[in-house]
Image 1 (cartoon, rainbow, N blue to C red):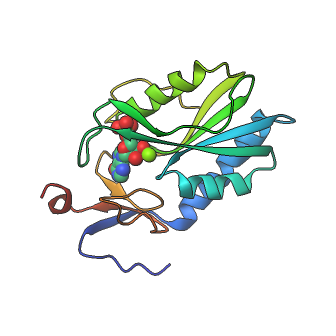
Image 2: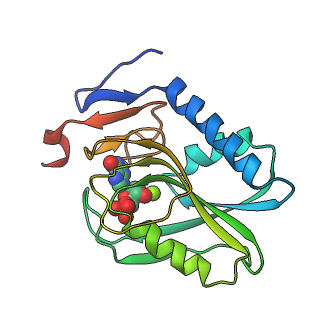
Length: 183
Ligand code: IMP
Ligand code: MG
């Protein structure tokens, strides 16, 4: 892997290989748990695009995909817990086995809101898969069945995660220098 760190990036926390290996294990767990069922993957735009693309292609389980866009009100690097739906699902969730696919759980406020919102739509089951989790930042307990990596609370970018819409396309996960997001 060639790493050409810009001056904004501090350190590579997880390489592309580490991320893909872990996703393969998560996919195996999901295949085992949903054997013979037809799963609806719900991705949360935009951060979860990379996780969804890679994880879904590693599954043997038959899946459909749908997308939601939400905004966790608040600026910069902190989530406020006030969630607004910017784009709702196209799919009726009645009786469906739903798996929310998320990039990262920071405070947990967004996911906890989203999970209860989707659960109230008559799902047969609802679980969460998140590739990254910051255990030290979690403010509300969210029951996440599939977690990729627990990471430090620093602000991170790459593999779908952005800072001001930048760095989503990095193949790895990197931390950002404080001077970038504290400006
Ligand atoms: P939460 O509500 O605090 O759990 O965070 C919700 C959203 O904030 C995540 O889905 C991400 O889109 C974003 N987020 C949280 N931490 C980071 C980070 O370190 N880098 C980039 N985005 C983040
Ligand atoms: Mg997100």
